[in-house]
Length: 272
Ligand SMILES: C[S@@+](CC[C@H](N)C(=O)[O-])C[C@H]1O[C@@H](n2cnc3c(N)ncnc32)[C@H](O)[C@@H]1O
Image (cartoon, rainbow, N blue to C red):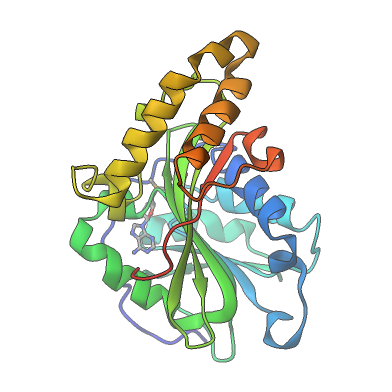
């Protein structure tokens, strides 16, 4: 049985939408498929955890289908702090798919480990001061080498921005990247990404902060490359990212990412 413990966190709005997180899943499948498929050591039976899946479990079940294309045996756990939402999900549980009432302190059974946590549109409803304690609590069951993607999206997932953090051998989070995603359906305006930044950045787009410098440089880069719009939004997005990279920002300019609408900014590892 899971340890009986009070879920840490607070109930928040449960809005979700079908396929809202499809691009986040596709990003993970491209970024590190081995995270989902590896079966070495404790990874063999380790879980993908979807924290805060919302008023129903559709995004968890959609991810289950996507991730099990590469690992049919992947165990999946949806965690919700709202009991009614757990009850609504339980009819969809099976031997590999679990739903539990919980919070940042994830209820796990003895011997269970986590390879990947996805927490989307959860921390946005908290205060900035809650961010670091939440990350510290979530770290507890994650295997070294494991990953968390934690971010915010628009209601239907056309745009999102997410932190990627990696668990180190020393059992601490190491910041790996801030990732921006667009399917280009809402056009391309750098400012739109500012409004969906994760909690640790959204209040910090002010002079003197690195995230402010990043956005100013990205906006300048988009303006300088506006001529590329003639060839379409995708080409413009690529050209702007290349211009941003030329300004010294550690942006991954591989077409594999940019052509699909993913901008990966490799951030400084320190401080979660
Ligand atoms: C806006 S919904 C997001 C649903 C889904 N992840 C998505 O992006 O479409 C946020 C959900 O997170 C849940 N939640 C908030 N804090 C939580 C916590 N500490 N642990 C687990 N669930 C939490 C809320 O109950 C709510 O259902």
